[in-house]
Image 1 (tube, rainbow, N blue to C red):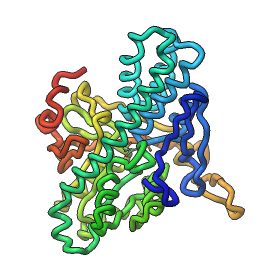
Image 2: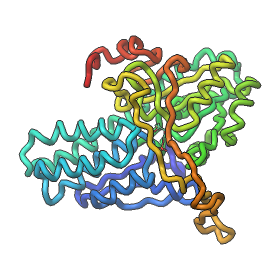
Image 3: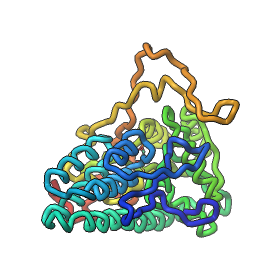
Image 4: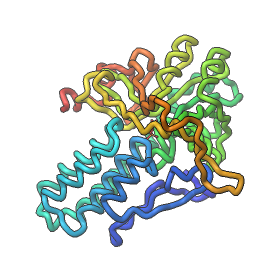
Length: 364
Ligand code: MRU
Protein backbone atom coordinates (compact mmCIF):
# COMPACT_ATOMS: atom_id res chain seq x y z
CA UNK A 1 0.00 0.00 0.00
CA UNK A 2 1.14 3.53 -0.66
CA UNK A 3 2.17 6.06 1.95
CA UNK A 4 2.89 9.42 0.35
CA UNK A 5 2.73 7.56 -2.96
CA UNK A 6 5.47 5.08 -1.94
CA UNK A 7 4.74 1.35 -1.46
CA UNK A 8 5.39 0.76 2.24
CA UNK A 9 5.17 -2.15 4.68
CA UNK A 10 4.19 -1.62 8.31
CA UNK A 11 7.33 -3.28 9.67
CA UNK A 12 10.93 -2.81 8.53
CA UNK A 13 13.42 -5.49 9.51
CA UNK A 14 17.10 -4.78 10.17
CA UNK A 15 18.62 -8.19 10.94
CA UNK A 16 22.20 -6.88 10.86
CA UNK A 17 21.33 -4.40 13.61
CA UNK A 18 19.07 -6.90 15.42
CA UNK A 19 16.06 -4.58 15.41
CA UNK A 20 12.90 -3.64 13.55
CA UNK A 21 11.14 -0.36 12.93
CA UNK A 22 7.39 -0.21 13.48
CA UNK A 23 4.77 2.49 13.17
CA UNK A 24 3.61 3.67 16.60
CA UNK A 25 -0.12 3.38 15.93
CA UNK A 26 -0.96 5.12 19.19
CA UNK A 27 0.27 8.33 17.49
CA UNK A 28 -2.00 7.95 14.46
CA UNK A 29 -3.92 9.54 12.82
CA UNK A 30 -2.14 12.69 14.02
CA UNK A 31 1.47 11.64 13.39
CA UNK A 32 3.19 8.93 11.39
CA UNK A 33 6.00 8.02 13.80
CA UNK A 34 8.34 5.09 13.21
CA UNK A 35 9.88 3.68 16.38
CA UNK A 36 12.74 1.25 16.80
CA UNK A 37 12.21 -2.06 18.58
CA UNK A 38 15.59 -3.44 19.65
CA UNK A 39 14.87 -5.74 22.59
CA UNK A 40 12.48 -8.47 23.64
CA UNK A 41 10.90 -6.18 26.23
CA UNK A 42 10.34 -3.45 23.64
CA UNK A 43 8.67 -5.97 21.31
CA UNK A 44 6.38 -7.19 24.10
CA UNK A 45 5.59 -3.60 25.09
CA UNK A 46 4.79 -2.64 21.46
CA UNK A 47 2.19 -5.43 21.25
CA UNK A 48 0.74 -4.94 24.75
CA UNK A 49 0.44 -1.15 24.43
CA UNK A 50 -0.97 -1.50 20.89
CA UNK A 51 1.80 0.44 19.18
CA UNK A 52 1.32 -2.45 16.79
CA UNK A 53 -2.06 -4.07 16.63
CA UNK A 54 -4.26 -6.14 14.33
CA UNK A 55 -3.98 -9.91 14.45
CA UNK A 56 -1.55 -10.55 11.55
CA UNK A 57 0.77 -7.68 12.49
CA UNK A 58 0.83 -8.83 16.11
CA UNK A 59 1.94 -12.26 14.86
CA UNK A 60 4.67 -10.87 12.60
CA UNK A 61 5.93 -8.52 15.31
CA UNK A 62 6.08 -11.37 17.82
CA UNK A 63 8.12 -13.44 15.34
CA UNK A 64 10.57 -10.59 14.88
CA UNK A 65 10.59 -10.00 18.65
CA UNK A 66 11.65 -13.60 19.15
CA UNK A 67 14.46 -13.17 16.61
CA UNK A 68 15.63 -10.05 18.45
CA UNK A 69 15.52 -11.96 21.76
CA UNK A 70 17.92 -14.67 20.56
CA UNK A 71 20.81 -12.31 19.84
CA UNK A 72 23.23 -13.13 22.68
CA UNK A 73 21.76 -16.35 23.89
CA UNK A 74 19.60 -18.85 22.01
CA UNK A 75 19.34 -21.68 24.54
CA UNK A 76 16.10 -23.64 25.03
CA UNK A 77 15.55 -21.70 28.25
CA UNK A 78 15.88 -18.34 26.48
CA UNK A 79 13.57 -19.50 23.69
CA UNK A 80 10.94 -20.67 26.19
CA UNK A 81 11.14 -17.47 28.25
CA UNK A 82 10.85 -15.21 25.20
CA UNK A 83 7.89 -17.18 23.83
CA UNK A 84 6.18 -17.04 27.23
CA UNK A 85 6.66 -13.27 27.50
CA UNK A 86 5.49 -12.51 23.96
CA UNK A 87 2.66 -15.04 24.14
CA UNK A 88 1.19 -13.36 27.22
CA UNK A 89 0.88 -9.92 25.64
CA UNK A 90 -2.61 -10.24 24.12
CA UNK A 91 -4.93 -13.23 24.47
CA UNK A 92 -7.49 -13.11 21.67
CA UNK A 93 -5.61 -12.86 18.37
CA UNK A 94 -4.52 -16.42 17.67
CA UNK A 95 -2.01 -15.21 15.07
CA UNK A 96 0.29 -14.41 17.99
CA UNK A 97 0.39 -18.04 19.13
CA UNK A 98 0.41 -19.31 15.57
CA UNK A 99 3.54 -17.28 14.80
CA UNK A 100 5.32 -18.22 18.03
CA UNK A 101 4.47 -21.91 17.59
CA UNK A 102 5.76 -21.83 14.03
CA UNK A 103 8.97 -20.12 15.15
CA UNK A 104 9.49 -22.62 17.98
CA UNK A 105 8.91 -25.62 15.69
CA UNK A 106 11.45 -24.24 13.26
CA UNK A 107 14.08 -23.24 15.82
CA UNK A 108 13.99 -25.93 18.50
CA UNK A 109 15.59 -28.71 16.38
CA UNK A 110 18.49 -26.40 15.46
CA UNK A 111 21.68 -26.05 17.51
CA UNK A 112 21.55 -22.84 19.58
CA UNK A 113 24.34 -21.25 17.51
CA UNK A 114 22.19 -21.46 14.38
CA UNK A 115 18.97 -20.18 15.93
CA UNK A 116 19.46 -16.42 15.77
CA UNK A 117 19.99 -16.23 12.00
CA UNK A 118 17.29 -18.84 11.40
CA UNK A 119 14.83 -16.85 13.51
CA UNK A 120 15.34 -13.75 11.39
CA UNK A 121 14.77 -15.80 8.24
CA UNK A 122 11.62 -17.42 9.56
CA UNK A 123 10.21 -14.11 10.80
CA UNK A 124 10.84 -12.64 7.34
CA UNK A 125 9.06 -15.62 5.78
CA UNK A 126 6.04 -15.04 8.06
CA UNK A 127 5.97 -11.37 7.03
CA UNK A 128 6.32 -12.16 3.32
CA UNK A 129 3.61 -14.80 3.49
CA UNK A 130 1.29 -12.35 5.21
CA UNK A 131 1.70 -9.92 2.33
CA UNK A 132 1.05 -12.61 -0.30
CA UNK A 133 -1.93 -14.07 1.57
CA UNK A 134 -3.55 -10.70 2.07
CA UNK A 135 -3.13 -9.89 -1.62
CA UNK A 136 -4.88 -13.19 -2.41
CA UNK A 137 -7.70 -12.28 0.01
CA UNK A 138 -8.08 -9.07 -2.00
CA UNK A 139 -8.47 -10.97 -5.26
CA UNK A 140 -10.97 -13.48 -3.83
CA UNK A 141 -12.94 -10.77 -2.06
CA UNK A 142 -13.21 -8.66 -5.19
CA UNK A 143 -14.44 -11.68 -7.15
CA UNK A 144 -17.05 -12.38 -4.43
CA UNK A 145 -18.37 -8.85 -4.80
CA UNK A 146 -18.91 -9.27 -8.57
CA UNK A 147 -22.70 -9.35 -8.37
CA UNK A 148 -22.90 -6.45 -5.95
CA UNK A 149 -20.66 -4.40 -8.25
CA UNK A 150 -22.87 -5.24 -11.25
CA UNK A 151 -26.00 -4.20 -9.36
CA UNK A 152 -24.43 -0.84 -8.54
CA UNK A 153 -24.03 -0.27 -12.27
CA UNK A 154 -21.11 2.18 -12.02
CA UNK A 155 -22.24 3.80 -8.78
CA UNK A 156 -19.73 3.40 -5.91
CA UNK A 157 -19.91 0.09 -4.08
CA UNK A 158 -20.73 1.00 -0.46
CA UNK A 159 -18.71 -1.15 1.91
CA UNK A 160 -18.98 -0.80 5.67
CA UNK A 161 -16.16 -1.95 7.93
CA UNK A 162 -15.44 -1.98 11.64
CA UNK A 163 -12.15 -1.43 13.47
CA UNK A 164 -9.01 -1.49 11.34
CA UNK A 165 -8.38 -4.65 9.38
CA UNK A 166 -6.32 -2.86 6.79
CA UNK A 167 -2.69 -2.24 5.94
CA UNK A 168 -1.98 -1.07 9.49
CA UNK A 169 -3.26 -4.34 10.97
CA UNK A 170 -1.04 -6.50 8.77
CA UNK A 171 2.35 -6.35 7.08
CA UNK A 172 0.67 -5.07 3.92
CA UNK A 173 -2.74 -4.74 2.26
CA UNK A 174 -4.86 -5.76 5.22
CA UNK A 175 -7.51 -8.45 5.30
CA UNK A 176 -10.96 -6.81 5.22
CA UNK A 177 -9.57 -3.80 3.33
CA UNK A 178 -7.62 -5.86 0.83
CA UNK A 179 -10.67 -6.41 -1.46
CA UNK A 180 -11.32 -2.67 -1.17
CA UNK A 181 -7.79 -1.90 -2.36
CA UNK A 182 -8.18 -4.53 -5.09
CA UNK A 183 -11.44 -2.89 -6.23
CA UNK A 184 -9.82 0.54 -6.18
CA UNK A 185 -6.87 -0.76 -8.23
CA UNK A 186 -9.27 -2.36 -10.73
CA UNK A 187 -11.06 0.95 -11.25
CA UNK A 188 -14.22 -0.14 -9.42
CA UNK A 189 -15.63 2.92 -7.63
CA UNK A 190 -15.88 2.16 -3.94
CA UNK A 191 -16.88 4.14 -0.87
CA UNK A 192 -15.95 2.81 2.57
CA UNK A 193 -18.19 3.51 5.55
CA UNK A 194 -15.87 3.41 8.51
CA UNK A 195 -17.22 2.76 11.96
CA UNK A 196 -15.32 4.75 14.62
CA UNK A 197 -14.80 1.69 16.89
CA UNK A 198 -14.90 3.08 20.41
CA UNK A 199 -13.07 3.06 22.73
CA UNK A 200 -9.72 2.75 20.90
CA UNK A 201 -11.04 4.36 17.72
CA UNK A 202 -9.32 2.04 15.25
CA UNK A 203 -11.77 3.40 12.66
CA UNK A 204 -9.65 6.54 12.63
CA UNK A 205 -6.70 4.39 11.56
CA UNK A 206 -8.82 2.93 8.77
CA UNK A 207 -9.83 6.40 7.59
CA UNK A 208 -6.19 7.52 7.72
CA UNK A 209 -4.86 4.67 5.62
CA UNK A 210 -7.72 4.89 3.11
CA UNK A 211 -6.94 8.60 2.73
CA UNK A 212 -3.24 7.78 2.19
CA UNK A 213 -4.21 5.46 -0.63
CA UNK A 214 -6.84 7.77 -2.10
CA UNK A 215 -9.90 5.61 -1.36
CA UNK A 216 -13.14 7.58 -0.72
CA UNK A 217 -14.57 6.98 2.74
CA UNK A 218 -16.88 8.38 5.41
CA UNK A 219 -16.45 7.98 9.16
CA UNK A 220 -19.47 7.28 11.30
CA UNK A 221 -20.14 6.87 14.99
CA UNK A 222 -20.57 3.20 15.87
CA UNK A 223 -24.18 3.74 16.84
CA UNK A 224 -25.05 5.09 13.37
CA UNK A 225 -24.33 1.77 11.65
CA UNK A 226 -27.76 0.26 12.33
CA UNK A 227 -29.59 3.14 10.68
CA UNK A 228 -27.44 3.02 7.55
CA UNK A 229 -27.88 -0.73 7.25
CA UNK A 230 -31.63 -0.49 7.72
CA UNK A 231 -31.83 2.30 5.13
CA UNK A 232 -29.95 0.14 2.57
CA UNK A 233 -27.14 2.69 2.37
CA UNK A 234 -24.64 -0.17 2.55
CA UNK A 235 -24.07 -2.93 -0.01
CA UNK A 236 -21.95 -5.19 2.19
CA UNK A 237 -20.09 -5.25 5.49
CA UNK A 238 -16.62 -6.74 5.70
CA UNK A 239 -14.51 -7.15 8.83
CA UNK A 240 -11.32 -8.94 9.80
CA UNK A 241 -10.94 -11.47 12.59
CA UNK A 242 -8.72 -12.16 15.55
CA UNK A 243 -9.64 -15.81 15.73
CA UNK A 244 -11.98 -18.04 13.76
CA UNK A 245 -13.04 -21.21 15.53
CA UNK A 246 -13.34 -24.60 13.81
CA UNK A 247 -17.12 -24.14 13.48
CA UNK A 248 -16.77 -20.75 11.77
CA UNK A 249 -17.56 -18.53 14.79
CA UNK A 250 -15.60 -15.29 14.57
CA UNK A 251 -13.92 -13.24 17.30
CA UNK A 252 -13.26 -9.69 16.17
CA UNK A 253 -13.25 -6.18 17.57
CA UNK A 254 -16.06 -5.52 20.01
CA UNK A 255 -19.07 -4.18 18.11
CA UNK A 256 -18.68 -6.60 15.21
CA UNK A 257 -21.54 -8.78 16.48
CA UNK A 258 -24.00 -5.88 16.46
CA UNK A 259 -23.18 -5.13 12.82
CA UNK A 260 -23.65 -8.79 11.92
CA UNK A 261 -27.05 -8.79 13.61
CA UNK A 262 -28.13 -5.66 11.77
CA UNK A 263 -26.93 -7.16 8.48
CA UNK A 264 -28.92 -10.34 9.08
CA UNK A 265 -32.02 -8.32 9.91
CA UNK A 266 -31.70 -6.34 6.69
CA UNK A 267 -30.47 -8.98 4.25
CA UNK A 268 -27.08 -7.33 3.77
CA UNK A 269 -24.07 -9.62 3.22
CA UNK A 270 -21.63 -9.81 6.12
CA UNK A 271 -18.14 -11.03 5.14
CA UNK A 272 -15.18 -11.94 7.31
CA UNK A 273 -11.72 -11.85 5.74
CA UNK A 274 -8.78 -13.58 7.40
CA UNK A 275 -5.61 -15.50 6.53
CA UNK A 276 -4.74 -19.05 7.63
CA UNK A 277 -2.92 -17.72 10.70
CA UNK A 278 -6.27 -16.54 12.13
CA UNK A 279 -7.96 -19.95 11.85
CA UNK A 280 -7.90 -21.92 15.09
CA UNK A 281 -8.93 -25.46 14.26
CA UNK A 282 -8.16 -26.53 17.82
CA UNK A 283 -10.87 -24.20 19.12
CA UNK A 284 -14.25 -25.89 18.75
CA UNK A 285 -16.46 -22.79 18.86
CA UNK A 286 -16.53 -19.12 19.73
CA UNK A 287 -17.40 -20.00 23.33
CA UNK A 288 -13.82 -21.19 23.83
CA UNK A 289 -12.18 -18.02 22.51
CA UNK A 290 -10.59 -15.93 25.29
CA UNK A 291 -11.84 -12.34 25.20
CA UNK A 292 -9.32 -9.69 26.22
CA UNK A 293 -10.49 -7.27 28.90
CA UNK A 294 -8.42 -4.09 28.64
CA UNK A 295 -7.69 -1.32 31.09
CA UNK A 296 -10.76 0.76 31.93
CA UNK A 297 -8.80 3.97 31.35
CA UNK A 298 -9.08 3.32 27.62
CA UNK A 299 -12.73 4.14 28.18
CA UNK A 300 -12.42 6.75 30.93
CA UNK A 301 -9.97 8.91 28.95
CA UNK A 302 -10.37 10.38 25.48
CA UNK A 303 -7.21 10.99 23.43
CA UNK A 304 -6.56 13.63 20.80
CA UNK A 305 -4.59 16.80 20.17
CA UNK A 306 -4.83 19.84 22.44
CA UNK A 307 -5.12 23.37 21.07
CA UNK A 308 -1.31 23.45 20.72
CA UNK A 309 -1.60 20.37 18.49
CA UNK A 310 0.10 18.26 21.16
CA UNK A 311 -1.10 14.71 22.02
CA UNK A 312 -3.35 14.99 25.03
CA UNK A 313 -5.84 13.01 27.11
CA UNK A 314 -9.15 14.31 28.45
CA UNK A 315 -10.84 12.59 31.36
CA UNK A 316 -14.49 11.85 30.59
CA UNK A 317 -15.02 9.63 33.64
CA UNK A 318 -13.50 9.67 37.12
CA UNK A 319 -11.02 6.91 37.90
CA UNK A 320 -13.52 5.58 40.43
CA UNK A 321 -16.16 4.88 37.76
CA UNK A 322 -16.62 1.17 37.10
CA UNK A 323 -16.37 0.38 33.41
CA UNK A 324 -16.36 -2.77 31.31
CA UNK A 325 -13.86 -2.80 28.46
CA UNK A 326 -13.99 -6.09 26.54
CA UNK A 327 -11.86 -5.63 23.43
CA UNK A 328 -13.55 -8.29 21.27
CA UNK A 329 -16.83 -10.08 20.76
CA UNK A 330 -17.91 -13.28 19.06
CA UNK A 331 -20.12 -13.38 15.97
CA UNK A 332 -21.83 -16.76 15.54
CA UNK A 333 -21.07 -18.46 12.24
CA UNK A 334 -24.76 -18.39 11.24
CA UNK A 335 -24.56 -14.59 10.87
CA UNK A 336 -21.54 -14.71 8.54
CA UNK A 337 -22.36 -14.77 4.82
CA UNK A 338 -18.93 -16.15 3.91
CA UNK A 339 -15.33 -16.34 5.01
CA UNK A 340 -12.70 -14.98 2.62
CA UNK A 341 -9.23 -16.44 3.04
CA UNK A 342 -6.11 -16.63 0.89
CA UNK A 343 -7.45 -19.92 -0.51
CA UNK A 344 -10.84 -18.62 -1.54
CA UNK A 345 -14.37 -18.07 -0.25
CA UNK A 346 -16.25 -20.59 1.88
CA UNK A 347 -19.26 -20.85 4.16
CA UNK A 348 -18.53 -20.05 7.81
CA UNK A 349 -18.85 -23.62 9.03
CA UNK A 350 -16.70 -26.64 9.82
CA UNK A 351 -17.62 -28.14 6.44
CA UNK A 352 -16.89 -24.88 4.63
CA UNK A 353 -13.47 -24.53 6.24
CA UNK A 354 -12.71 -28.17 5.41
CA UNK A 355 -13.19 -27.47 1.72
CA UNK A 356 -10.41 -24.86 1.82
CA UNK A 357 -8.18 -26.52 4.45
CA UNK A 358 -8.69 -30.31 4.16
CA UNK A 359 -5.27 -30.89 5.72
CA UNK A 360 -6.28 -29.11 8.93
CA UNK A 361 -8.89 -31.70 9.97
CA UNK A 362 -8.22 -32.75 13.54
CA UNK A 363 -5.47 -30.16 14.01
CA UNK A 364 -4.60 -29.36 17.61
O1 MRU B 1 -7.37 -4.56 19.36
P1 MRU B 1 -6.91 -4.55 17.93
O2 MRU B 1 -6.87 -3.17 17.35
O3 MRU B 1 -5.62 -5.30 17.74
O4 MRU B 1 -8.05 -5.35 17.16
C1 MRU B 1 -7.94 -5.51 15.78
C2 MRU B 1 -9.10 -6.19 15.19
O5 MRU B 1 -10.04 -6.56 15.86
C3 MRU B 1 -9.03 -6.48 13.73
O6 MRU B 1 -10.30 -6.41 13.15
C4 MRU B 1 -8.49 -7.90 13.54
O7 MRU B 1 -7.27 -8.03 14.23
C5 MRU B 1 -8.27 -8.23 12.12
S1 MRU B 1 -6.83 -7.40 11.51
C6 MRU B 1 -6.51 -7.77 9.92
